[in-house]
Amino acid sequence: RLRCDWSSDVCSSDLRYKKLDSETEQIKRVKRDIKNMTQFLGDREPHEYSKVDIFKYIERRLLTVSTGTIERNFNSINAVINKVYDKLEIDYRHRFNKPDIPHKGEDKKDRGDFTSEQIAQIREEIEGTGNIRDQLIGLVIDTGMRVSEAVGLASEDIKLDCENPHIELHKNPFRRLKTKNSVRYIPLVGTSLLAAKSLDYSKNWLFPSYLDRDKEEFKGTSASNAMNKRIRKILGSHDVPTTHSLRHTITTRLRSVRCPQDVREEICGWRSTVPDLYGQPSDIAIKASFLQASLSW
Image (tube, rainbow, N blue to C red):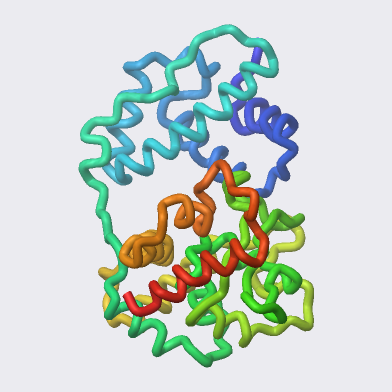
C-alpha cells in the first residue's frame, strides 16, 4: 500500500525513476503543486480523492490563478502519479487526468507576435552592446531558440569560422532539451550573428552567470525574466510580447518569405523526421537563406 505523504513518497519515487535531482525546478514545481492541493483537501492516497473533491479545489484555485495555470498543475500531478503507480504496479484508478476546469482557456491573454517595428527597435537598442541580456535577446531574435536553449550554450556549440556560421544545439550535462527534436543546427544571420560574434569564448560556458553548478542546471527562468524586463524597457510598455513570442515571430517571418513548413519546423526544433542532408553545409545554407530573407520582413 502506497502511503500518501506526497512530497516524500510519491515525489521521491518519481525522482528515483526519472533519475532527477531533488532540487531541480521541475521537482520543486511538482512538490509545490501537490502541497497546495493537500493543504486544501487533506493528505490522502491519490485514488481517494473524488471528482467532487478535485472540483472544489479547482474552484478555490480559480480565485487566484488562471485556468492555464491550473491545467499545468494537474498535468504535473497526473504525470507523477501515473509514473509511480505504473512502477509500483498499483491498479487503483485516480481522477487527476483531464479535470473539469470551468471556462478553460477563456482567460488566456495572447500577446501575439512582435511587430516588425518592435523587432527593428529591439535590434537597434541591443546591437553592439556587451550586456548579457542584450546578447541573449540577440541570439534568440533571429534563431528561434528557446531561452533555456540559448542560456545553456557552450563555447564549442557556436561555429563562426565556416562558410555558414551556425549553432550546433545538443544536450549537455547542464541543459536538458525539451524534446529529441530540439537537437538541431541553426544558422546565424542578422542580429543573432552579431550577438554571437560579441560573445566571450574564453570559457566553457557562454553565460556562466546563469549556471547553478550545485543544481547542475542553467537558470532559464531567471534569464527569461531579465530579458523580458529589458524588452519592456526598450519598447516603453509592459503590455508587449515576451521572449517566448520571439519563436512565434520567427515562424511568421519565415512564412512571409515562403519558407516550407518542414524547414521552419527543423529550424525551431519541431520536426520529428529530418532529411538525409540534415546538418550538412548545403542544409545549413538553405535554412540560412530563408532566415536571411526574413530579416526584411
